[in-house]
Image (cartoon, rainbow, N blue to C red):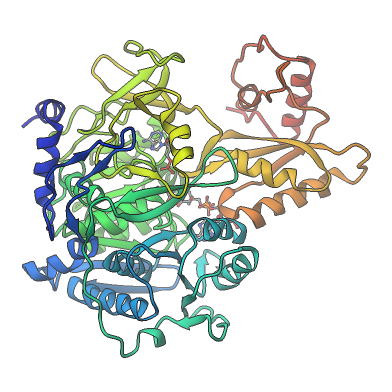
Length: 631
Ligand code: COA
Ligand code: AMP
């Protein structure tokens, strides 16, 4: 069937479409129906089914004869390690870890925070939680203690699983001290912590609270899979909103299984047994969905890569991995390709490796710029497919469905709506606009299976953030347009979220940190364009009156403060002191205009600006930081 037939088929009978997709999953009790809309606009999927994620991702493949197939291939240029874990080995490891967690009291519904680098044990920990019906929340290693503490206080874990350290090129990331620091800051304390001691750094364990990963599993009874209701939370994943309090996206179990399984064949075009590589991190949604869950649910081999696209050791690392492990599909963020392209513009490293096994490259996480797409097309000689989604949706809203029918690629567009998503472009009043007209992107409710069910402990915030502005729609926070063929174009965020190297960050959260500096009276953070990372944050600081300290010292302290509070991943390195911030007469900071000046774009003087002269002062300060950059 063609894409159009499948999409129209879904529209005509969504219930039948999703019940059929549900056949790809093994249920302990089959659901009686797909959609549960009695609490609308909060929708649930497959709620009366009983199912276990770990069974579907691991055990069933062993039962069905895939026991010896590699489930996880770990390749770590930073620790010079490679390891292959078959499905049977993974089942045994996960059952034992789950047994050890259960012996210490972790059960269905308990939260477990996982703070680990890109090592297979991170996936084992996620799957062990799923086995017990416990709800994991993975925290990205590039976040600092304060961010970890905020998440600990919000989801109140019974247990925290961490590694002693992570390895970034040229430095060790001290995870355990960061965790200890977070626990010192948080009101909530877990019952216990489990620490995987890596050979690069052996951490101090606190007597009575911290257990060694290996010792704690010794001699325990392996745990069986615990079936849970379809609407039981599978995990919480925090993502940046407009404030310092991140949003805890709640993914429910059954919809997650059904949608991810469907996406592997239909969107990504892979069959069970194929090797699928998402070069991201388990701390992000791409890592949850396409390093851990989807490939395993679908019976694929997944790659856990602990390294960078460049510098570990060179710009040929990706091609080596593709060749060595027979990778059929690579999924990564455009920034990884921009980094490789900068280092190896002529693609000389690519020619050193036989990458003929690679059939498709998928890009997501940020806008895929046409130059990067063209470079990848030319040098890899495979289709380069953009797909658009978010932490909240968990899988592609728009894509080119390679497993159904490859559609013509239009550069700059992630192509068309996937079944389940009815994408509409809306004006400020919530009315749909015509083709090629920019507007806010809404998705008609209900969202499909696999998308967020609510926000953890914050249903009101869920309704307010996503469902209230345009009644009847989910508000994506992205602005863009659709062309006459239904291709969508994602142009900008409508909120204070910026995208730095494919990482979603909140300028509001950075402003909260800067405002805590004793010399800062007021501040603004904007995202400016960056050739490598897409965007980088830039801070403007207005000092408290009477402060006469050296501006350079204050800027350095502010940069350190953001790194210490939010983490190195914020990549906050640019800031300057200004006398005043440009505002409207009602006091709203004109961040959008500041971005345009920094990016060297034409802008119209805002009619409501209080004092236009301030824009000249901002332009002057930007010049000091080297902006706008020469084209
Ligand atoms: N743990 C601890 N620190 C981390 C980290 C982790 N897991 N991941 C990144 N960091 C640190 C980096 O070391 C860097 O620190 P520094 O300021 O001391 O150099 C900082 O956070 C910023 O990291 P990053 O934005 O990744 O920049 P980079 O300069 O190290 O690398 C790229 C640039 C393009 C190579 C890198 O961003 C990349 O590989 N991106 C791929 C995109 C991706 O995976 N996106 C995920 C969503 S799909
Ligand atoms: P995250 O929740 O971290 O995955 O970030 C989601 C946001 O990243 C989206 O709302 C978009 O702003 C942006 N994004 C993700 N994928 C794309 C894409 N393919 N094209 C343009 N923007 C994207």
